[in-house]
Length: 140
Image (tube, rainbow, N blue to C red; front, side, top):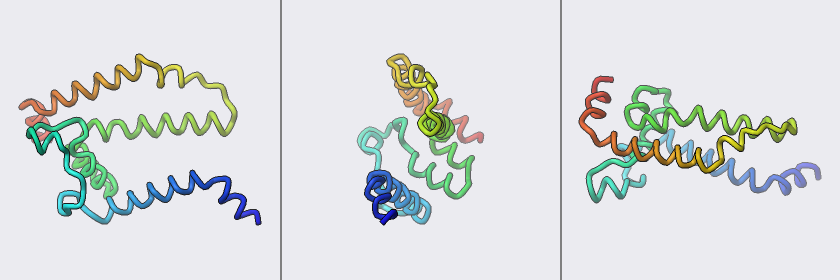
């Protein structure tokens, strides 16, 4: 009886967990460079320019296989953002679990932070299509 009530109370969390576990398994076992069922970037397909998200699927596959430099070459912004995301999720978990009143939300989820993130993504998109960026990535 206890298990049924636990499943009923945590149904949304279980569905989200199973969804992400399925995605992780797909990206672990199937290389996005070799299989055509993975999504292609519409911007790159239409214009030839790479957006800030180009290479995320390949980078994720490389990270799952512990090839960090290869993942960084595919999409450095994605690789750098993972520790930041883990930190934010960890703070939110600790805050909820221990009922702490941490005012991190005021700094992370305010208007200035969101604008700063958008500027970083926009600048990264511009730099990513430059010859300097390509030379740096080839050097690595």
